[in-house]
Every structure is written in C-alpha cells, then in structure tokens.
Length: 378
Image (cartoon, rainbow, N blue to C red):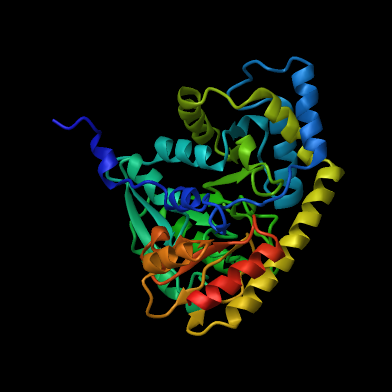
C-alpha cells in the first residue's frame, strides 16, 4: 500500500519555482518568476500599517471584509461592465491561485473534463488533476501569436468539457485575446453547457488591444482576479472570484472555509486602498516601464535567428519558439551562462521548443546583460 494518495501520481512540482530556485545563484539574471519587480504602492502599504495599529489583526468573514467585497463589486461594474454582482457574490482569497483551486475543487471531480489552452499556466493542469478531473488541451500556435483559431474552436466543441479556463492576457505567452475571439469561444460554451472560469489577473497589463470580460455579456462565467500583478502585491496573497450565480459562490466558499478560513485581515484593509487615485497612478507608471521592457525584449529577440515570436499584447512575458531546439536543454544551457528562463514544455506540449522569458522583475540594464549572454549561447 502506497503512503501517497493516487492523485499525486500525475502532479509534478512547479517548473517555475524549480528554475527560480536555481536562479538564486550569484551572478544569475533571473527571468523566470511571474512577478513585477516593483514595490507595492505606498498608499496600500500605509493602509495596511494603519490597520495593524488599529488592531485589525483577527479573523474576518470567510468571504472577506464587506468593505473590500463592495469595492470589488463596484470595480467590476465600473471597469468590466459586469452587472449583477454584489458583495455576497464575491470570495476574497489567498491569491488568484488559491481561489482557482477552490473553484476546481468545488466544480470538478472524477469523470469531469476541464479544457485549457495549450500552452497555459503550469498550475491549471496540476490543480485539475488534484481535483480528480481530466484535462482537454486546446492547441494554440506560435505563428498565430498563440491566439485561438478555428482549430482551437473545433477542439473545444468536441472536448465534452464541463469547464473551460480562459486566461487573457495570458501566461506564458502574453497574448491578449481579441473580443471577437472570446465571443466565438463563449458561444460554443453556451451551446455545449460549458461553464467558464475567466482568469483575468493580468487585465490591466495591456499594451495593445483592450481587455474584454466574458461575464459582461455571458452567463455561467466565474471571473477570477487578484491584486498581485496589477499592484505588485504578489507577497500579499490576495485574489478573488465573482459570479452572479449565488449557488456557485456558496460552494466555492465552503472549500475556501475548509482550507484557508479567511485571508490576512490587515492585508485586506491594505487592498482597499488599491481603489484610490494614488494606487492607480503608481500602476500606470509601472505599466509604462513594463511596456518599454517588452519593446526592448522584442528588439533583441528579432536580432536572433530561427525564432518565431509575435509581439505579445500584455502581461510581462514573451514566449519565443526556437526551431529545432530542446527547450529543457536550452534552459539548462542558458542557466549555465547566467540567465534563468522557464522551459516551454512545462506549459504544455505546444510549449515544446519555446522558453518563457519574464521581464517583470528585470530592468532594462539587466535585460541588456541577459540578451548579450543569450546571443552568445544561442
């Protein structure tokens, strides 16, 4: 009899954290981790400090403090055109990853199929398998900038999926899905009774195109977001989900109650300040710096041979496809030269031959040094 649960057989450690750990060696330029390398806006930190001084250090309601959930509901209506959401239809969680886990544990189980893009964020597949469900991969192509095409739509229609996870702007590709493409996907989901989990954690980090929230026009959508990327609050561990269907939220909350209980109290009060003009101004400055980094990375990639990489419209990743290369071997070779990236195969079979480069935590000087080393290696 094995000590370990059967569900662990198909779940691997995160390649992101493994290569990030390797990047801690002296002299290595770390282009692995999915975070912006900026400080949290001062107004948010000051609000959290005030909450500590005021003794707001105890349990909160499991769904989150009412003030924060009301602010999120107002934001969703104002910025995302998502109506029918009140504070009771929102669960504040320990980051976007944790609320996705709660959603999958509440809605997916043995015999269920969850469709995800190929490639996609490494934790989608792992969490689906931990829930006991099966994965249906929907192929994306580097030549199309990893934007869903007719092949993707056909695969979704025949997938027999119960759930679909959409992520735009996307990790690992940085692709921003056009509104017309998302609507074509949602119409298939409506026709086939597929519930949609819309992961929108990078919604503000868009340089070309614009963000479209599926729940603004479609039912049977759970919107997922977080404060982590937008306000450089990755260590605060705060995210949330929202759904007009109260029954869905109630089931998600049960998993949340039985796993985390509630999020850190003073962090929630800090997050309240993210809805101020000071926080928005800090975010805007961060986005302009990230845009400059994205443009520089694309300039340097275009100098290299045998690379396919459409300019991504958002997030802080590029996902170049290098012809005739073993991406794990390349990532290890780059690491030996002092540049840490993530092998594309970690994100799905369509990531073979790709590497994920995160420019969120590296300034232009670091990126210049990294690409000088990469040019010698590649």
